[in-house]
Length: 148
Image (cartoon, rainbow, N blue to C red; front, side):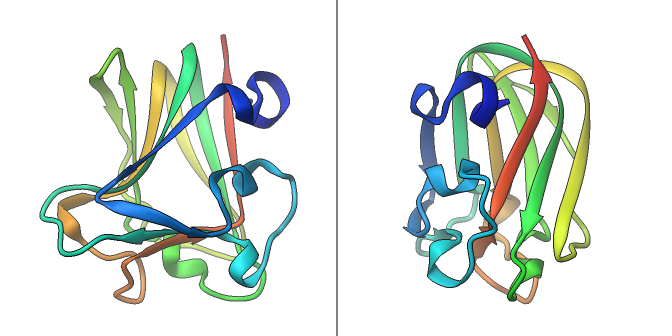
């Protein structure tokens, strides 16, 4: 939806107790299985006690039905484990998916029951770690499936 309909230039990216390093946010939507430092990395900053990760603010509300996280093909697929997908509408939390508990090279799909939202956050709750006791969210592509 973001790559094919909305356009990456029409969304806003935000970091929460973290910062982007290596592959930038747009690399999540370039339709390339980026490897190594070309892949997207969001790094936890310090020792937060709350959520850390990143968010995508959409230009208007959409019905979101799933997110597909494409794990790197070279390593580090566990760096999406423990991520929680949270959807917001006008600043109010409207849906929180269960944490991603396992990962694989290739696609990990998080189903969402057609929730209307204008912001998508991918966060690790309570200052926790991603898989392998890492403070890094790292994958190569993000597909947001939904409709207006």
